[in-house]
Length: 422
Image 1: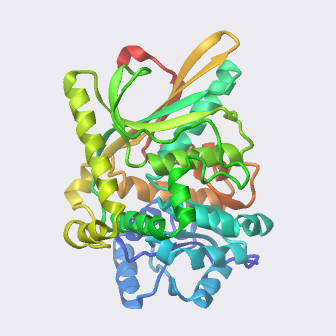
Image 2: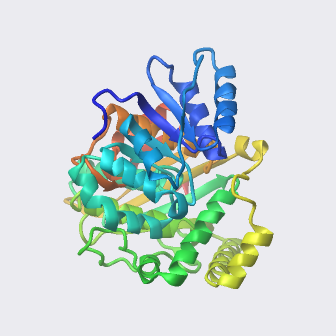
């Protein structure tokens, strides 16, 4: 079990990568050494020293940023880190390749853990292998604490909480709209997608995970009324606009369904959710939705076969570690709008929850979401009955994460839906 007084509050694992360094930068800007015992970790001591020097030079308060050395393939080194840390916060992917031994170390030590993964095939593996042990050891293993899947998961939770408080009933359906999004895609993100498709090509459990909308639910409860993510373009009745599939829907929808199951179905067992990209009401909106849908389906088809997947990785994808330019990150932004529809004592209702930020969703905003998730776990700022297990942002932390993100300059709102603005 972890030390009674761990040496480190949070270890940012993978701090020499783009995402990890951004998380470390955010935490050292936001918190002083007196309030946060932070360390950065990885396997390359010289690169870690360079990152620590940059963090110290950028801060008036951090005279020293400790480093911890380990290797994602060396369980003993990860055990030593987990045993002296309260929360391990990792950005090292693809998680299918580099994440399992770190999760195992944290579960065995009873150490809390959070990551950025969108690799649902790997999350399914972690659930099946470690959930029961994590419950027994009070280790909170919290996946998908970045753009995948905090806005969708937290937005849905807040819409449901508001509906129950105001109308006495949960939303039967929540539809998530990914709007006004601008930002870059990293080589690491695409490498993770490639690993997921590679797993599905050879592993029947991985294939079932991508096929079944309820594949991340607890064992024995992997079925329900939802048919899964939207595959083509549609006219959305709730918004009266054309919509395209969201590339994040296969991750976010499954995370939301797992949250509902872990929390003992506060959204109801007939609950449905979907995530889409709105493209407008005109003929141009229909055309745009068709183009987006066609592009996503073509990408999925290409990634499903080894020769085309290899060609994409070799000739099209940026290398892991490469990311968007500083200009792209500075001009980035996103809005995820959740519209929830249900029926209360006084009749039908529609509620609206918004999570957004004027930062690149996959980098600047994600660094804050992951960093504040780690801080919530560290300080016990959680609204959850669950003290351990393989969890989600909504089921592990909940509303306190919304409060912290609002303080971190995110837009976080919830209320009745006013369709006159759309």
